[in-house]
Amino acid sequence: MKELHKEITPLSDNDLFIVLNHPSAKFDYPVHHHSDYEINLVMESHGTRIVGDSEERFTTLDLVMIGPHIPHAWQGEVVDGNHVITIQFSEKVLHFPMLEKRLFQSIKELLYDSQHGLCFPEATILDIRDRLLNLTSQHGFQTVIEFLQILHLLSVSEKRKLMEHVYDTQSIVRISKSRRIAKVCDYIDKNFEQPIHLCDVAASVNMSESAFSHFFKRKTRISFIEYLINLRIGKACQMLSETSHSVAEISFRCGFNNLSNFIRIFKKKKGTTPSEYRRLMEQLLYKY
Image (tube, rainbow, N blue to C red; front, side):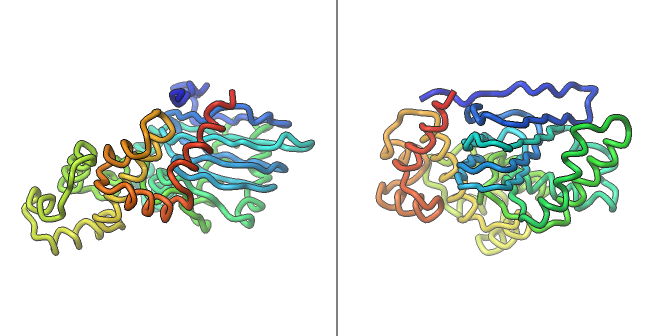
């Protein structure tokens, strides 16, 4: 299979953000990733949206926010009146000192949560659609105020995570602010294909199983077992998309020692079998 396309965005070091305006979008860009945050609004179209290991149908109005390095693509119908507006801004924004201030806490959480890919309801879209449209024609400092207002509105809006796991596991470490969590996540990333037992992981950070389980969930907002399964399914999705390995081999490489169990868990998490998921991704990956 073809490798995922890495996009070099037009964002420069001197830019706070950029706005890409695409009336009559052709939806001909393959699944790709880049190092910037992205807010994407699709209007008057319908089709399939890929964000990480999530694939969903979208209709009429679709607004998502995507964290850095997450593969994504839209396969939409080219219809009269369709319109796509994209805002891209650097991952360095997360390190801006002002985000440490209390008033920016909700925006900081929004940036963290975008590592799951975020989808917003129609009410939010209608609330900020005109603001996004205005950004395509505005210039100067007013655009900065509008940009921050958009981030604020998204941060306080209802939102739905598109992926159960985070594509960038460093997000878990950043959220936890814990050296123990960093050590555990690093160990799992390096050994996910091997049997991993709770007792061994807990012992590696000098904790009992019970204490570690409570500690991990309190720090990361997800149970250890759930994190491990989600990470393995996420790795399987990547392999299904990017390699020609058989489903059985991918199951083994992702730490599942039983193929039937892997297929059952995969279908429960993704709503489709591994083979069906691969076929869908192939259709999008080869759409150049």
